[in-house]
Image (tube, rainbow, N blue to C red; front, side, top):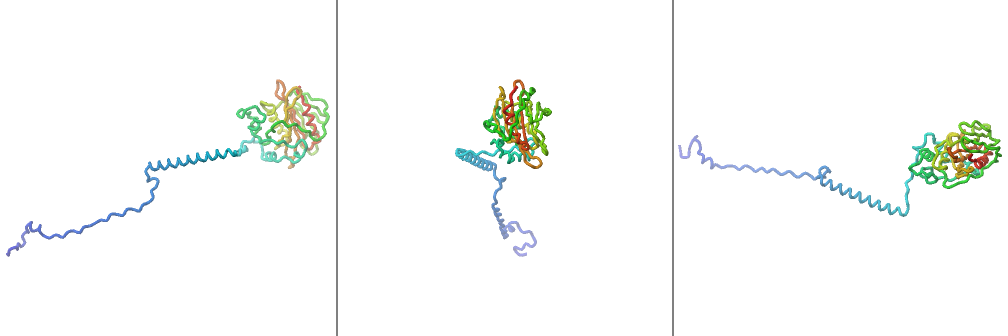
Length: 329
């Protein structure tokens, strides 16, 4: 065995340590590229940022409202803009029909052309208008019955100021004595051309003769006022005039021709003249009407009411005679 020949013997450790080694290749892992930037959603923002944005937006809204108020107040000095009032159709009495409202807006042409029946200009019906025109009750103390009348489209508000009853056409009948209605406390003329009739439900009643083919004729009645008494005679007379529509054809409406204080003997009273518009058998018709409300001591006020249809308009002048002859007993 030659030197350095060790055969199959184990190699000494110091020899193994000096053997050549092949270095391992260096592996480099590339860093991942950053993701593309995407817009942040509101939920991704910190809450303090969200609060700041909301505070800034609220400040802008407040400033804008303040600027608008300043501009409106400056424009108001040049002219006032009033919002239109809402209609009260939803609160009308159930007895009021659409035909009655349309009839009030378009009265019969014959009434406007007849002397003494041309309607007076009246403001729109409203509680405020009536309370300022003649009622002494404040807007918060209006009687429910009066409020209902003021909101009834069949009955317009009374004209401002006094309007005297004008001379109506026709020929006046000569009174044939007086009817003394002691139940009501008034006296009224008795006409020979008018027939006495059963008074109920009134205290006295006179009727004109029937006209052939007509279902409605003239009527003159007296009774204690059947409506709630108000603080003024004027307001009480308004309720009484509304009540008289119950004695006219269905759907009847009113236009005023007179509104004035009167003296019924030694007692005060209020007179209302009006034209009643209605439709019969498809034709527009009118009646001339008037009532006198008389203050009676220790009793409810008395009402003297007369209405005459256009089919008997030759008797319209009797209305003037009645209204000038009413006296308190």
